[in-house]
Image (cartoon, rainbow over all chains, first blue to last red; front, side, top):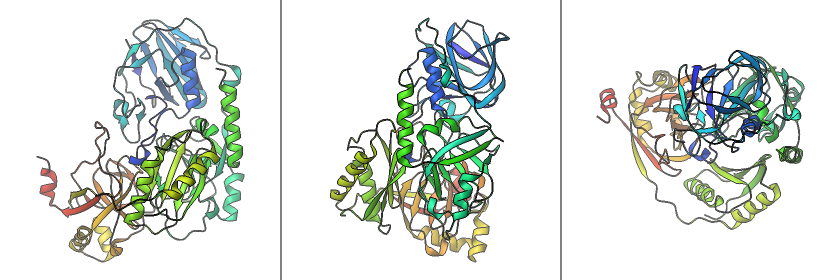
Length: 307
Length: 228
């Protein structure tokens, strides 16, 4: 059985939780950028937590199901239609053979995840299905789905249980996203004025942002630094400051080594939120220390452990 | 090599960065690479991966399963007693490069900036043997040390949108090879027809830190006929 892409949407790709463990040969983890909602979509279907999902970005696809299936949608809020009937996406959905799922306008957020009760028939690359669109690796050689493409799926049995998205996890995403960060390795290279500007202004998010990183712009930040930096490791959530003074927040397909000052680091808890930031919206950074960042994560871990 | 002077810094809420305060050298690269292999065997709670770099090693953990002090103390105790003997025998890889303006868009600019002819550049670039210091940035991108001081050139202010796979480039004091087509801010001085990164193989690349790269010049004809 299969899902047929009548229209592929703006950037629809297959993702799981990525391929950690290969940064030392330059391969970044890729995978679902909003991993929280990725897991939630799988939960709606009763799937294993790392079952691959479709990640849709800004403009959703039109899908046809060739067999009865169970799906779950979580993340950015879109109007969704099943056979042209407006449907709520906050719960487990049962679709029938021949049904057509259509995404309308995006209401808030940038990325949604569609989980389904099965696994792709294709092989994994380095233990992951994730499509790495930047390095052209993984599912579909790193290419997003195209119109009329077919995703062949090996379905598995499913329960008839209907799960509802817990209200407190049903997030509306603001147009100015507040992201908590710890100091980066080269934070102290920023001038005093730049240190203030990093946290006191909102940065605009460029339309050139992608799965590799969010490019932002605001009042340029200056560093007290003359020579070029030696290339050094970076990770998902590292905020780099290129010579133009406009920060770049690295995402799941970001490079593994970089040559620009690392001025900040997004805390683990807020990494998934980065996936919901739309081009032309704003991002503000809020400074916390490492101990606080770890505390915040423990709180989050405990609050979703009941799912 | 005995443990060089080092310092463990908290990189993020789930990673530690070990900085080594020691001049870059073959022995240090060997030390860091060997250490990275050993760190994965330590079974520190939440360990995910260790990433080698120039004079540093980044150790990444799972935020839900690690404990900062425990990880930091474990690493510190381990490094203090960790030493390497001799040097791994490097693989020596001979890499054909076509230094032609047709394949290397920055070659002429680079040479006129340096006030040298293309053949002088080729002579200088091929005269030395380069050590793989680390892989990264892109899948299989090789960072090579050993560039002649006369060829040092700061990275471009504005990176190129598309650098073709196989491009051989200079960025600051480093020279490197772009394994896949990608954006890039280094000066492209040549292109190799050799393939370094093969996604359908596991591992997709067989080159590791400490390996040695020797460039030799080939003509455009040889470039296009390579592998036939």
